[in-house]
Length: 270
Image (cartoon, rainbow, N blue to C red; front, side, top):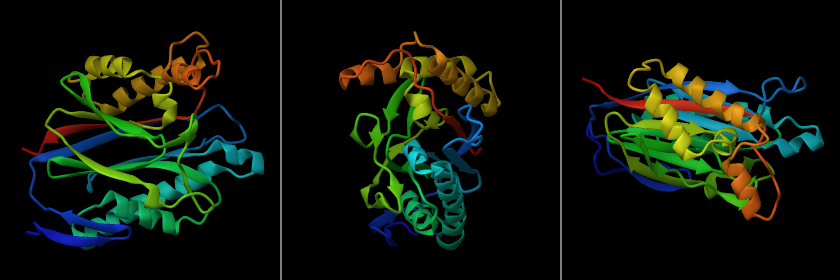
C-alpha cells in the first residue's frame, strides 16, 4: 500500500503519514521493580510492548493521589492497557500507528480516578514517532553514546505534567520524531530510572551488555537493578540529588520510587 503524502485525521490535528517500507525492526524487553509497599504491591508504574506493531509505552501514576485514598497505579495500568488495545486497532484499521492518536484514544477510554505521565514510541520506516506527557522519557544510544533524549514536561521541580480526568488532556502532549539506525538502543523508562541514573552510567551498562548480551530482558534487568541500588543509597550521586539542589532543596542520594525500564534494539529485517 502506498500512502505517501496522504493525510490522516488525528484527534488533535493532522499528521502526514508515510508508509515507506523499511528494512528496520524494533525488538523490546522490559523489567519492572515496584516499590516495596504491601498496600500497593503493583506500584504506580505501567508499560506495554506491542511487538508486531513496533510500539512501546510507559506510564507513571502520580503518587500524590494516595493522600486521597486513590491508587494512581490503577489509572496508569488502565491507560497503558487501553493504549495497547488502541495500537492494535490503529494498525489493523489504518496500517500505521500514530502515537498521539493512540494516547488520545487510550485517555478517552480510561475512566479510573487518578493521573499519570505517559511516553509512547513507535517505529515507522526509519523514524521513531513519539508522544510524551510529563517526566517519563527515553534516550537513544548510538555507538555507545546518548545521541538523543526526549524532552520532559514539568510544572516545577518534581511536579510533572500529567493526564487524568481532573488533570490535563493529551492536547498538552509533545509529539516528535527522530531517525534511527541499525544497532541503535532505546531505553525508555519512568522517573524511577532517570532520577537515579546518569546518562554516562546508562551508556556504560548498555555497552557492557551489547552485543554479547543477546537477551534484552537481562539488559533491562541490569539497568533497573542499578537504578534501585542508586535509589537506596543515601550517598549516591544522582540526577535527583542534583536537580533538588538546583531547585533549592537539600536531598542526598537517590529517590526511592517504582522503576520501569524498557530496552529496545533496532535491527535489520534481513
